[in-house]
Image 1 (cartoon, helix red, strand yellow):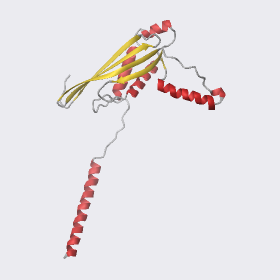
Image 2: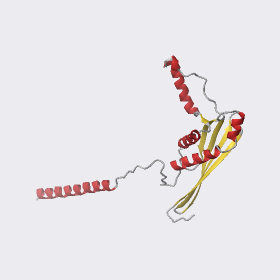
Image 3: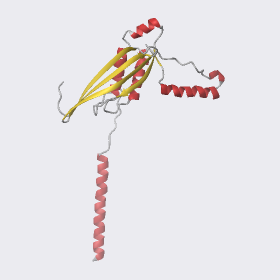
Image 4: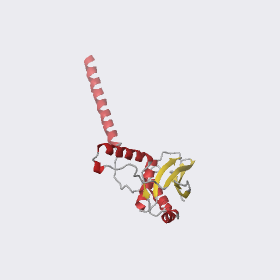
Length: 210
């Protein structure tokens, strides 16, 4: 009698294990993710938060506005040639994480692609380049060594900040982004241009009609 019960128990346990394995495999298959490649310029808003589209759009529009103002013509008249710009610190004063480094890169891209200004490296980038020049002076062939003291000095520095205001009610939310950028004459400390770009997003499950 004892052996019969043991065999039955073993069969019952094996049956339960088989069912559990099947359920686990099925659950794993049903929860698998599907990945679809899309064009990098495609606008996709999942959370409604600041994303790559916002970064690129704000940079293009605000730099486009910057380059249409009188300061750039005034520089050409007084100094001749294209103005040299450096992008300094852009502070994230919002209540969410924003990839500021990506935004700075978008600003530099907009400046360079305009063909109207010359853009120089940031302080952190310059440190790495200076180390390379010093290394060349010790190890590179003499005819290929790049000289010290030949850096292009910037005429203007761009700085700024990103702020947000949130309004929430129930499951609905409105997020307002304001980006303020300032262009300053490095020699005189004069602010020669101030630009601003605003974005407003509605995030919610209810039907919204602007």
